[in-house]
Amino acid sequence: MTFTKKKLAAAIGGTLLASVGVQTTQAAVDLDNTASIGLKYASEIVIGTSGVALSHADLQDVNGIMAVNGVQSTTDIRVTLTLSSGTFTGTPALKIVQAGLTDTGCKTAAATADLNPCPATTLFTGGTTADSSVTFNTATGTGIVNAGAHFSFEMAGITVPNQSAVTATVTTQIADSFGPTDLPTKTGPYLSFVPLLSLAADPTTATVQAIDVAQNSLFFAAGATGDNAINVGGVRVVEDVSGTAGLGVATVAIDATDIISGAAHTITAANGFAAFDQGTAIAGESITVNGVAAVVSTADSTIAVAPSATVPAGGNASSSQDVVLTAPVANTVTIAETTLTDTVTSITAGATYSAATSTGTVALNSLTRNGSAARLTFSVNPTSAYPMSLRVTNDSSVVGPTTLTLTNDDGVTSAAINITAITGGPAADLAAGASTGLMSMANVFAAVQAADATFALGATSNKLRVNITSLTPTIVLNAFSLSSDGTTFSMVTDAGA
Image 1 (cartoon, rainbow, N blue to C red):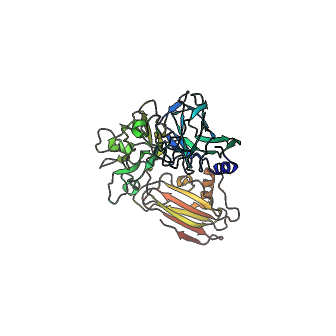
Image 2: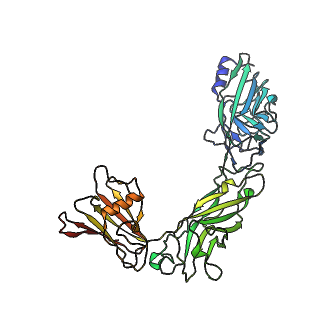
Image 3: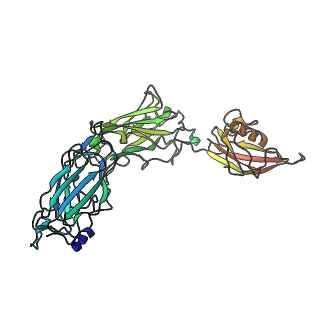
């Protein structure tokens, strides 16, 4: 029995779709799920010059609804699978099956139950290890393909030349006495590559505290004096456990232990570890990663290297790689302000996978001093008829450097300069309890412009704002103005810390 025009229209009205990831019993690539993202392979897979063969029982199979309204008897069927790249590792097979992917997707012309296997398919073209496309033929004969029956391509594997995403396209053509007719074509994601491992900064238990200038920068500013240790956070090897990544070359899923055998941490302090590495004669100082000592390099005092440690399946746990810097309890070496980084170098577990995604440098918390600041929200322009001068006082018991910036009325802030660069400023760091001489705004502006030639007065207003910062517990900024006739000398403001 062949199709009438009415029956043919009904068959064409049924869709041939293909989407990845329908939850079928085989968990294959099913092109009916438009929300699917396809199979996700670990981008750590090493792909050589001849490509790499990926094979997974069932997971790589491609399924989809064949024709919603079925296919009637005396009709030829041709189904073609085409991959956008890669080649087959072996010839796929094609079955026409029931919606549940059982082998009973057809019935005889007179039967009412769906109990019969569909006719076998025969390879028409393609399917070799040099091909990315394969076509099969079959025919209904005197039977009928059930409504909602699926095509199921059983894949032997795919060889990919690179990590470009691969899409799968399935086309179906039916032919009866009216001639061939194309059913709708659908393309969906088949496979792509995403990292299984990555590096992440882990500040979960990091200590947020500054180097305490009130303790001569020998300790950290915790609740009590003499705090000699700080946790600057860590860097973890993180494994994607969301389920959207992790397929390996020949296993269903892999974890961190399949890719790397361990990871080493190199801590870099731009200004060195002097307070935390004072030699064997001084007890109590250390640099540790996860409680294990990192040794400062004899060739480069800014680098401390911890030994390699195993990364567990699932990746490093939170706070497991914390970096702790400890000075001696009776420290006498100034703790330097510095940036800190952790360079993680992972070690591959073999030639199949790369450690690149779990190797890299990540910033840790920096070491900074607390210090103090003061500001002046109004200053006349440097050539005003009412000359203004500044005076800075360090009223603490700690000596420390003091810097100054100017901000014009357009909101542009200059580069910072040390007040030693200003005529009338101190020759060195401002001593404990000391004050500068009077520094005229003309001299302040000249010193700022000498360091930052791009800084200028505002376009529509020529007033300035002054900000000072100091690595001392407190700092005071005074501003004084002289009348135009030179008879009155008054303090404009006291912008203390």
